[in-house]
Image (cartoon, rainbow, N blue to C red; front, side):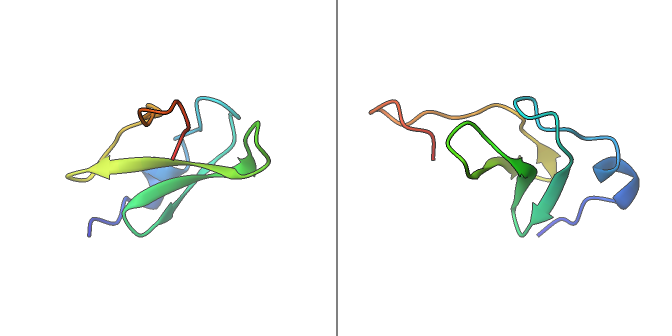
Length: 62
């Protein structure tokens, strides 16, 4: 598991809520709730933040 440096987490923002992102294991979570009332999650791909929302086949965000 790659821990992102605090200096990077200080500047990263959720593209939907514009809130700070917090690392939670292998994902980043928004510090403010998204449209559905829950924090949004973004994956880390080999330590690189992927700030795109993946959609499942039924159109629901994981």
